[in-house]
Image 1: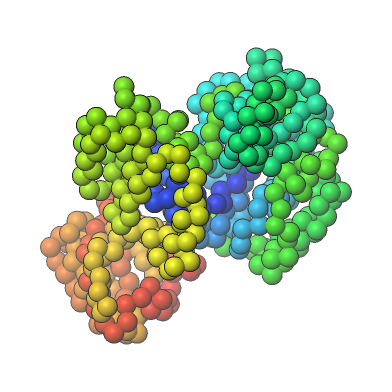
Image 2: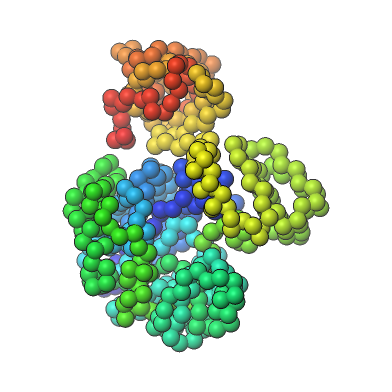
Length: 476
């Protein structure tokens, strides 16, 4: 009987190098940005391994603020994760993998773990499966397996792995790992790719569940001990596992490579040449996408004339491009990026500067997702705000009250059930209702169709902080 394979999907990260499309409120792993696919990178991550023999439903590690996004996207593809573990704060991949391994041990002691990032793309899934199967065989022999991406360029944005033996992408055999190399400068990267012993570090791993916990105990006991304590004090919250915040705060902030892989004698690297990318920047996304005859990637409402080598994307407004060369132009409803492809690596620093200066566009989308649906702030001033609210079928907001604002709701599509204090009313299209300050109220969609309404807030203080919840289906 073959071992069960439990995927651990690492779903943290802000994706700031794909700003303004990817932001902390809705980062790249939840976006459908590849080849016009309707599935997000997270959904594709599980989809591409779901057909493998003995693969179980995944354990997903994510940030607390993204918990409902993870749950909804898994539900949309018919997957019920073994666990969705919420990190109170990001502590890098070392603690995240330890949490996943401890949870997997509860589920199945005699299992293999397949660790994947939620934001990668792999174009040739058949080759990926062949390499994974080879990795499972090596892991059965008590090896800690990782995958080295066969380099296509002197990339400075990835770490590298030096293998003891020469790697051959056409003969899928593993080699002992000599050392890991941090992201190199351009000159070093050019030297590294001349040798077949150097590959890009993919951040994907396979190993036995008990074996990796033993390795943590030897090489990173502080990570293991703090994660054990955090898991012992965890509790179930709807579909989520909430670990103990105070215990986890003591976990060292270390990548798994540094915590374990650089220290173990059991590391194996297998070459992978399957069209892999971590979509780390707009330039790498441009490289991965189909292009027109002038080498442009064009998406959305774009009119182009005599431009070449560009990535042109419009989310909302009409974008007209004339005679551009090697530029990235990304339009969203509230922010626009214009950059030369060669300068795009500076974007992360720019976004950090925007955040430091208090620009909400640095981390928040205009469209904000909630477990019951979403809303868009259309226009606002000091004492009023207009929103478009969408409520999912058979969903409801919390029973709540506001101290400083009143609200008007106008239904533009669907049917709304509105409770104000002890009175409940049904509203249909073109009907409206007024909710005075301090009145308890709740909005529900009782139908199987989406509900869309316009909300007008007015009052002395307009803020999302002005919500007092009395009942909530989502435990907020």
